[in-house]
Length: 287
Ligand SMILES: [Mg+2]
Image (tube, helix red, strand yellow):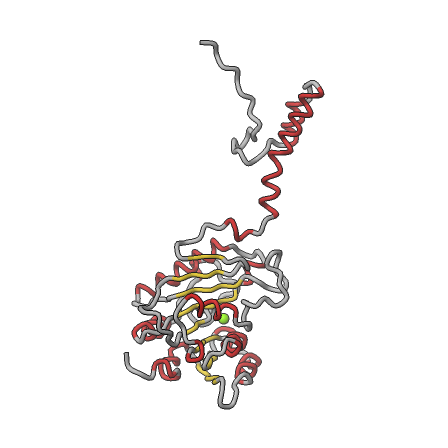
């Protein structure tokens, strides 16, 4: 049987990966002595090999993330995760929680599991909500993703650490929502005022579409005034502003207090997440 002629590879000799074209130098060296028609043909193949990679780099990045089961990143780039679904379809009050500075100690743009410090009372508060049938939902602005300081992979790793530590202490989160948009983010996350970025209510409204939540009876806990504002904008019963994390600033405290409405939206103050157990009407009834 005659020996097959060797197939001349069009792929990068160094990496041997089909999505990477040869280096320009390698291409030039190999094609320098080709007849003109073969040179043009080889050049066209080389250009075609380069094209998909350039397009991939220019595309919106969230379409290329491998996410855990139960997660979807919607058309607007917002992280939507359903971890548990309460029994039945009857709506019920939920407990919305900001993440950084509330469930975990504030770390600027937290993106490494090793930096995760779950606060002392987090498991107790979440388990108390679990015991009373209140869906527990994390709603977190993650502009670090939009600013390309870290990626969804880092977010996934940090979330794994947080949720794992809570679960070890008998506390379970039902849904997680994260918004990567920011006015100074890189495309496609450079939105001047994205409807999902707190203080806007987009993440809370998405949660109410995903889970059986009665927004008007629900509460939010946050360390920034914009967490409390998101609760008001979503039509919640009230918000608990903590003086943890960014909440230690007098400006944040004044801004949060100013969000209260007489006879309407309630704003309570707390010094630690554990204060929620005594302060929030959600925990008034015994489980
Ligand atoms: Mg926070």
